[in-house]
Length: 243
Image (tube, rainbow, N blue to C red; front, side, top):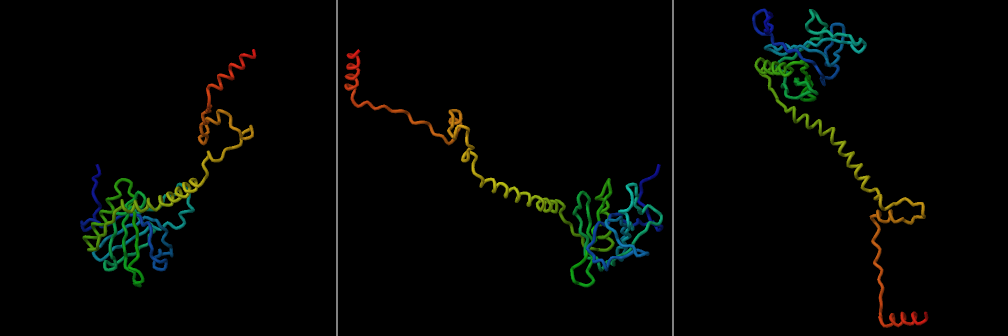
């Protein structure tokens, strides 16, 4: 039975390696490193971070032209003996902080903030995502532990829940505004009862339509006024005498 143990280096110390995915960066194109044959970074790509006492070394696998491969294409990974990589690194003095706690869709992320050498901006960022299908948070925790203990870099924690709320509100707000416009437009439409289609009898409502018409009023009760009952009796007697 094979024992599940972390790999160790030749001197017996655990390797401070973290396997993540380099998701994106806002470094200007002129500052991005290239491969031995001039290959460019094609992100996202698999990355291996090695944390030493003086800084961080980052190896990124090269996958140029991967869009032209078929569906059965298997990308290279660090399990291979000599995968094609681009290597670059940063001294500990240039690492401003590590931001953890955020998420990219369902993957936890860590953002490495590097000082801008031109001092135009505070710094540039490298965003790493943990795509492990079983325990993605463990890789972010391992990176945080080594960066804090070995390099003494500041760790900034953000709320993934708050980030998700801002993202949802950005998506929902336009939808709510559209509903507000639709309901406002509908409120300005005339009520159906105020515009009745003409009927076949010249617009005269039959009894059924009249009873169902909410705008109709009940007919006034017929009133008969008799001013003198004696005159009515006299008229009756005269009529009978003529028979």
